[in-house]
Length: 207
Image (tube, rainbow, N blue to C red):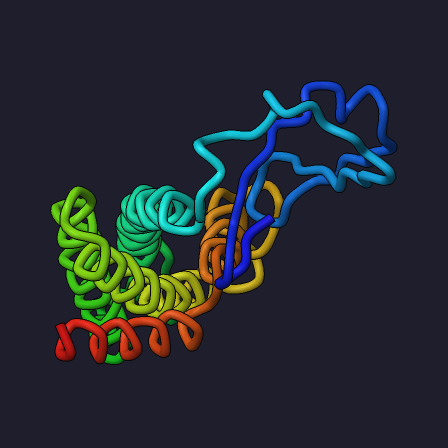
Protein backbone atom coordinates (compact mmCIF):
# COMPACT_ATOMS: atom_id res chain seq x y z
CA UNK A 1 0.00 0.00 0.00
CA UNK A 2 1.33 3.46 -0.87
CA UNK A 3 0.24 7.01 -0.13
CA UNK A 4 1.80 10.43 -0.59
CA UNK A 5 1.90 11.10 3.14
CA UNK A 6 3.57 7.95 4.33
CA UNK A 7 4.20 4.58 2.74
CA UNK A 8 5.37 1.24 4.03
CA UNK A 9 5.62 -2.20 2.47
CA UNK A 10 4.96 -5.53 4.12
CA UNK A 11 5.41 -9.07 2.91
CA UNK A 12 2.67 -11.57 3.69
CA UNK A 13 4.19 -15.03 3.30
CA UNK A 14 0.98 -16.96 3.86
CA UNK A 15 -1.40 -14.67 1.98
CA UNK A 16 -2.10 -17.09 -0.84
CA UNK A 17 -2.85 -19.98 1.47
CA UNK A 18 -4.96 -17.96 3.90
CA UNK A 19 -6.93 -15.72 1.52
CA UNK A 20 -9.26 -16.29 -1.45
CA UNK A 21 -7.83 -15.53 -4.86
CA UNK A 22 -8.94 -15.91 -8.46
CA UNK A 23 -6.71 -16.01 -11.53
CA UNK A 24 -7.63 -14.61 -14.94
CA UNK A 25 -6.04 -14.11 -18.35
CA UNK A 26 -4.58 -10.69 -19.14
CA UNK A 27 -5.40 -8.86 -22.37
CA UNK A 28 -1.77 -8.65 -23.38
CA UNK A 29 -0.92 -12.26 -22.54
CA UNK A 30 0.01 -14.02 -19.32
CA UNK A 31 -2.14 -14.33 -16.22
CA UNK A 32 -2.85 -12.26 -13.12
CA UNK A 33 -4.92 -12.67 -9.98
CA UNK A 34 -7.01 -10.76 -7.48
CA UNK A 35 -5.98 -11.51 -3.91
CA UNK A 36 -8.48 -10.61 -1.18
CA UNK A 37 -6.87 -9.87 2.18
CA UNK A 38 -9.18 -9.69 5.15
CA UNK A 39 -8.30 -9.43 8.84
CA UNK A 40 -4.65 -10.23 8.06
CA UNK A 41 -2.17 -9.76 10.89
CA UNK A 42 1.54 -9.62 10.20
CA UNK A 43 4.51 -9.93 12.53
CA UNK A 44 6.94 -7.07 12.89
CA UNK A 45 9.58 -8.84 10.78
CA UNK A 46 7.24 -8.75 7.75
CA UNK A 47 7.92 -5.03 7.32
CA UNK A 48 10.20 -4.31 4.37
CA UNK A 49 12.74 -1.57 4.91
CA UNK A 50 13.26 0.55 7.98
CA UNK A 51 9.65 1.70 8.34
CA UNK A 52 10.19 5.09 6.71
CA UNK A 53 8.36 6.36 3.61
CA UNK A 54 8.64 3.65 0.93
CA UNK A 55 7.14 5.69 -1.91
CA UNK A 56 10.50 6.76 -3.43
CA UNK A 57 11.60 3.11 -3.60
CA UNK A 58 8.28 2.10 -5.18
CA UNK A 59 8.56 4.90 -7.76
CA UNK A 60 12.11 3.83 -8.61
CA UNK A 61 10.94 0.26 -9.28
CA UNK A 62 7.97 1.42 -11.37
CA UNK A 63 10.13 3.81 -13.41
CA UNK A 64 12.54 1.01 -14.25
CA UNK A 65 9.64 -1.30 -15.09
CA UNK A 66 8.23 1.30 -17.49
CA UNK A 67 11.62 1.63 -19.17
CA UNK A 68 11.81 -2.14 -19.65
CA UNK A 69 8.22 -2.36 -20.92
CA UNK A 70 8.91 0.52 -23.29
CA UNK A 71 11.80 -1.42 -24.82
CA UNK A 72 9.53 -4.44 -25.22
CA UNK A 73 6.86 -2.30 -26.87
CA UNK A 74 9.38 -0.91 -29.36
CA UNK A 75 10.41 -4.44 -30.29
CA UNK A 76 6.78 -5.39 -30.88
CA UNK A 77 6.24 -2.25 -32.97
CA UNK A 78 9.22 -3.08 -35.16
CA UNK A 79 7.93 -6.63 -35.62
CA UNK A 80 4.51 -5.29 -36.64
CA UNK A 81 6.14 -2.94 -39.14
CA UNK A 82 8.31 -5.69 -40.63
CA UNK A 83 5.42 -8.14 -40.95
CA UNK A 84 3.09 -5.51 -42.39
CA UNK A 85 5.70 -4.38 -44.92
CA UNK A 86 6.23 -7.98 -46.03
CA UNK A 87 2.49 -8.59 -46.28
CA UNK A 88 1.87 -5.53 -48.46
CA UNK A 89 4.56 -6.75 -50.86
CA UNK A 90 2.90 -10.13 -51.45
CA UNK A 91 -0.80 -9.22 -51.10
CA UNK A 92 -2.13 -8.27 -54.52
CA UNK A 93 -5.23 -6.33 -55.51
CA UNK A 94 -6.18 -5.43 -59.05
CA UNK A 95 -3.09 -7.23 -60.31
CA UNK A 96 -0.51 -5.28 -58.29
CA UNK A 97 0.94 -5.49 -54.75
CA UNK A 98 -0.58 -3.29 -52.05
CA UNK A 99 2.83 -1.67 -51.55
CA UNK A 100 2.71 -0.33 -55.11
CA UNK A 101 0.04 2.16 -54.00
CA UNK A 102 1.44 5.48 -52.85
CA UNK A 103 -1.10 5.87 -50.03
CA UNK A 104 0.01 2.52 -48.58
CA UNK A 105 3.65 3.59 -48.79
CA UNK A 106 2.79 6.77 -46.90
CA UNK A 107 1.15 4.75 -44.14
CA UNK A 108 4.14 2.43 -43.90
CA UNK A 109 6.46 5.46 -43.75
CA UNK A 110 4.36 6.90 -40.92
CA UNK A 111 4.62 3.59 -39.06
CA UNK A 112 8.42 3.59 -39.49
CA UNK A 113 8.59 7.17 -38.17
CA UNK A 114 6.57 6.26 -35.09
CA UNK A 115 8.87 3.28 -34.44
CA UNK A 116 11.96 5.50 -34.60
CA UNK A 117 10.45 8.11 -32.29
CA UNK A 118 9.44 5.45 -29.78
CA UNK A 119 12.89 3.84 -29.96
CA UNK A 120 14.56 7.14 -29.11
CA UNK A 121 12.33 7.62 -26.05
CA UNK A 122 12.90 4.03 -24.90
CA UNK A 123 16.66 4.50 -25.18
CA UNK A 124 16.52 7.71 -23.15
CA UNK A 125 14.47 6.05 -20.41
CA UNK A 126 16.98 3.20 -20.23
CA UNK A 127 19.95 5.58 -20.08
CA UNK A 128 18.29 7.59 -17.29
CA UNK A 129 17.32 4.56 -15.18
CA UNK A 130 20.08 5.31 -12.65
CA UNK A 131 19.80 9.11 -12.73
CA UNK A 132 18.59 11.20 -9.82
CA UNK A 133 14.87 10.63 -9.04
CA UNK A 134 13.27 13.62 -10.81
CA UNK A 135 15.29 13.16 -14.03
CA UNK A 136 14.68 9.40 -13.97
CA UNK A 137 10.94 9.78 -13.45
CA UNK A 138 10.63 12.44 -16.16
CA UNK A 139 12.41 10.20 -18.64
CA UNK A 140 10.26 7.21 -17.69
CA UNK A 141 6.98 9.13 -17.90
CA UNK A 142 8.01 10.85 -21.14
CA UNK A 143 8.83 7.47 -22.67
CA UNK A 144 5.63 5.85 -21.41
CA UNK A 145 3.47 8.65 -22.80
CA UNK A 146 5.17 8.85 -26.19
CA UNK A 147 5.65 5.12 -26.74
CA UNK A 148 2.05 4.43 -25.74
CA UNK A 149 0.80 6.88 -28.36
CA UNK A 150 3.17 5.57 -31.05
CA UNK A 151 2.41 1.95 -30.21
CA UNK A 152 -1.33 2.42 -30.60
CA UNK A 153 -0.83 4.06 -33.99
CA UNK A 154 1.47 1.32 -35.31
CA UNK A 155 -0.78 -1.45 -33.98
CA UNK A 156 -3.92 0.03 -35.51
CA UNK A 157 -2.24 0.62 -38.88
CA UNK A 158 -0.90 -2.91 -38.93
CA UNK A 159 -4.34 -4.40 -38.28
CA UNK A 160 -5.97 -2.19 -40.90
CA UNK A 161 -3.41 -3.02 -43.59
CA UNK A 162 -3.84 -6.74 -42.93
CA UNK A 163 -7.61 -6.46 -43.14
CA UNK A 164 -9.97 -8.64 -41.10
CA UNK A 165 -7.31 -11.35 -40.71
CA UNK A 166 -5.33 -8.89 -38.60
CA UNK A 167 -7.54 -9.53 -35.57
CA UNK A 168 -7.73 -13.33 -35.85
CA UNK A 169 -6.10 -15.52 -33.22
CA UNK A 170 -4.25 -17.45 -35.93
CA UNK A 171 -2.17 -14.41 -36.85
CA UNK A 172 0.49 -12.89 -34.58
CA UNK A 173 -0.69 -9.39 -35.51
CA UNK A 174 -3.77 -9.64 -33.30
CA UNK A 175 -1.76 -10.84 -30.29
CA UNK A 176 0.77 -8.04 -30.72
CA UNK A 177 -2.06 -5.53 -31.07
CA UNK A 178 -3.56 -6.62 -27.73
CA UNK A 179 -0.14 -6.58 -26.06
CA UNK A 180 0.42 -2.96 -27.11
CA UNK A 181 -3.05 -1.94 -25.94
CA UNK A 182 -2.24 -3.47 -22.56
CA UNK A 183 1.10 -1.64 -22.47
CA UNK A 184 -0.64 1.68 -23.14
CA UNK A 185 -2.76 1.33 -19.99
CA UNK A 186 -0.27 -0.36 -17.67
CA UNK A 187 1.05 1.98 -14.91
CA UNK A 188 -1.20 4.72 -16.29
CA UNK A 189 -2.02 5.85 -19.82
CA UNK A 190 -0.41 8.55 -21.93
CA UNK A 191 -2.57 11.37 -20.50
CA UNK A 192 -1.52 10.48 -16.94
CA UNK A 193 2.17 10.45 -17.81
CA UNK A 194 2.00 13.71 -19.76
CA UNK A 195 0.67 15.30 -16.57
CA UNK A 196 3.31 13.58 -14.42
CA UNK A 197 6.06 14.67 -16.81
CA UNK A 198 4.86 18.28 -16.65
CA UNK A 199 4.59 18.24 -12.85
CA UNK A 200 8.10 16.80 -12.51
CA UNK A 201 9.35 19.46 -14.90
CA UNK A 202 8.05 22.10 -12.52
CA UNK A 203 9.90 20.47 -9.63
CA UNK A 204 13.10 20.37 -11.69
CA UNK A 205 12.83 24.11 -12.44
CA UNK A 206 12.23 24.97 -8.78
CA UNK A 207 15.28 22.91 -7.78
